Image 1 (cartoon, each protein chain N blue to C red):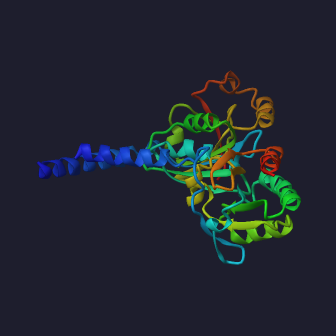
Image 2: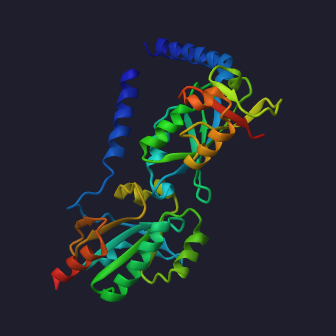
Image 3: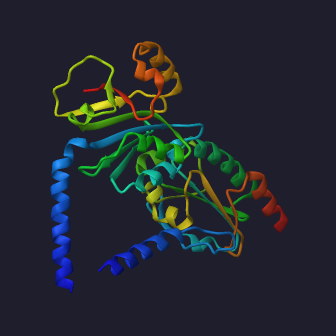
Length: 158
Length: 167
C-alpha cells in the first residue's frame, strides 16, 4: 500500500518536472483559438521563424513588450517571422480589449487558465512575459530574447 | 493483508478526524495576502508555487486588480502567520498586507496582541497583522509612531503578532 502511494507520488513529481522547454527542443504542436474563435494550429507556420509570446492583459510589462513586437512585426513582415501571442487571460473580454487597444495585428491565441494553462505548463512558463524563438526548422533557439537578438537571428539568415 | 491495511487506515483516519475536531480552536481558515515588490507580483508564478507547497493549502485564488492571493486552508491546521511571510519572501516578494480569517479562540492564545480596543463577539474574526514585514515599510513607520507605547510592538519579536480587528 505504502509502496503504491510512493510510486504514484514519484510519477506525479517527475511529470511536473519534465515540463520545461529547452534550447534545441522542437516546437510543441499548439492548437488554440484566436480572437475570432477560429482554431489555429502552430504547424501551419513551419518554414519561418516563429516567436511565441506568453502574456496577459493585466500584465503591464507584457503590454509594453507587445508594443515592441508590433514594431518587429511591421519591420520584418510575416514571411520572415511569424509572431504568435498566447494570452493566459481568464477573462476573454479583457483579452480582446487589450488586442484592440494595443493594435496587435499578429496572431493572437488564448489559453485561458493563467499559469495552469496547458501551453504555459508545456513551455515551462513561470513568469510573464515569456518569449520563445524557434528557427525555420521549428527548433527552439532562444528563450526570452531581446528585440535586438531577434533581429540578429533573422538578419543572419538573409 | 489488504483487509488489515484498510482497517488500519480507517482507524487512523477516524483518529485524525477526532484530533482535528478537538483542535479547531487553533486555526486560520483563510489568509488574504497582498504581495508587493519591485516587479509585477502577479506576473510570476513563484508566490503561487510557494503557497501550493504547503500541505495545509486547499485553494488559492488571485485577484488581479488588487494583487491579492486568497488562500483557503485545511480545517484544524496549526499554521503560524509567519509561514506566509516566509513563503512570499522565498518567492522574491514582500507582504503588503496580511488579513486572516480565524476562530475567535485562536487569537486569545499566546503571541497575538490586540492593539485596538474595539471588542468583537463574532465567532469568526478577521484580523490584520500589523508587524514589520506584514505591512508596507511606509505603514510600519506610521504604526511605529502610533503604537510607540506598546513595548512588544517596538521590540519586533518575530513570534508576537500585533493585530487589529477588521470585522
